[in-house]
Image (cartoon, rainbow, N blue to C red; front, side):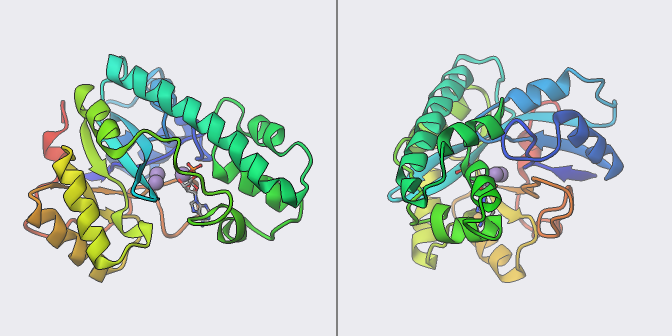
Amino acid sequence: MITDLHTHTTASDGSLTPTELLEAAVENDISLLAITDHDTLSGYRAAVEQDVPSDLRIIPGIELSTRWHTIGVHVLGLDVGPASEAMRTAEQYQQNARRERAMRIARRLDKLTVPNLFERAAELAGDAQIGRPHFARILVAEGVVKDAKAAFAKYLGAGKLGDIRNGWADLSTVVTWIRASGGVAVLAHPARYGLTKTRLAALIADFASVGGNAIEVLSGAQDPTTTQQLARLCARHDLLASHGSDFHTPGQPWAQLGRMPALPAGLRSVSTVLNSV
Ligand code: AMP
Ligand code: MN
Ligand code: MN
Ligand code: MN
């Protein structure tokens, strides 16, 4: 059974519409798919309004932005209650935070003298959750940087001018929202925060202590040493193991829909606790 528990649509910073994502899932023989857009369930809501093929199960998911000490961290909610009070609160809080953050990013990047930066990023985002990828696209279009990677490396990535983290709800709040809505809280791509081994172990311990349920032992294409390290931390804290591609757009070899190695032996997969699976 091919599963993918971490994917994006045009409701956040993915390039496929919810309908196109479902088509791609079918083409890739996926039978269990979580749609986990940044801070919104609207991609999931649009997807399940379609005629979903009977052999494809869609899990309502969300990727909530939060912070841990000074770094930005992502927590997935899998199998959350889309209509629950907790999710409505979470979406509203985070979407306000996103918009305010976008205004602050634009102000901070004033020195780049790109006219109407906020308005243009907001227009580009349209109905989608506005995020740093929208700013990156404008900086590329303006010739400030040559590609999105350079935009993150110089202006938007961790520790750079446009990296603003203090508006998000804190770690314990996002985990509480997810669990109160009936969902499972999963620490997303733990190896991608640039933490030392000691700090990574501390993050996972804190995540477990505030009620986190699982970590992504596999995120997209990841080196086997990292996977082994995450598997050990997962087992040590008695957490469930999740795996997802973090698919955003076709053609990225490091994040292809449904393409991941198997979870290391000895771990319990988070899919065993997802409702209706
Ligand atoms: P935001 O949700 O506004 O904090 O933006 C974070 C998103 O930017 C991530 O989910 C990725 O999709 C994207 N991203 C992060 N780092 C990079 C990078 N170095 N190059 C391109 N996109 C990136
Ligand atoms: Mn993203
Ligand atoms: Mn993420
Ligand atoms: Mn993601």
